[in-house]
Image (cartoon, rainbow, N blue to C red; front, side):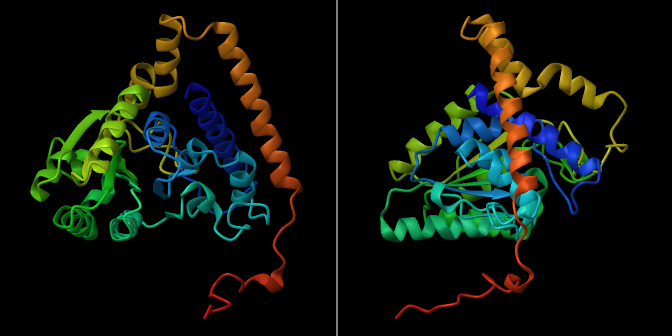
Length: 315
């Protein structure tokens, strides 16, 4: 899990730099500070389970095993990208790994994920669906509609809220009065739990427990992972709206990558030399991903309408 967390951090560091250097257009929302949530939650799933990601989803795909080369190529708008260069950073797809869509609309994946869980229930395929979204998404109307539907129909779904303290530039205290977002689950007779989202082991154990509960047929679960966004809302956001010293304090005390690394050192699971080697290997891997993306071909202009509509209807 540590290697994957390093992969996510290094990938996001480099991607943010590329955007700030003006080498890419559009937006990119990195998951600095969310590495433990991505790795811990996805590690707890089986290969057949389905994940619906959001606009801040690079880490979710990397945790599931999507190639950094294909994600980077997608960000560059190249034909070798996850979506053949058509979606950019926010709408990644990897159906081979059970990740049908990431939604750039805040909370947009929640209803889609609930529909996926309904399909699994109908088909009796024993698949658990994981929906990952931020704290701001829990204010959206269809968040409540989805939780109510999942509860009433006892659907096999985990609603995982990555509470990173900010909905774009608005601190959570300014858009929610409740202390714990997980309290909202009680309105739908659904188990809700708030955990330390900077502790990858705690995230893994909590999601694993939820998966086991769902496979027993006991219904949906809501998990709030409390963390902090160690970057701006997007690559061009320098975070001037934050109180002075806030980010530095969180980075010092709760950086999930640093926290897990320290734990592994203390338990003699990882040595300094091994950690250095991992970082060097990942750094090389990310460099190769950038080279791959830069050298890949762009989609042909005449294919712009391809994949917009289903081209063939079977039967």
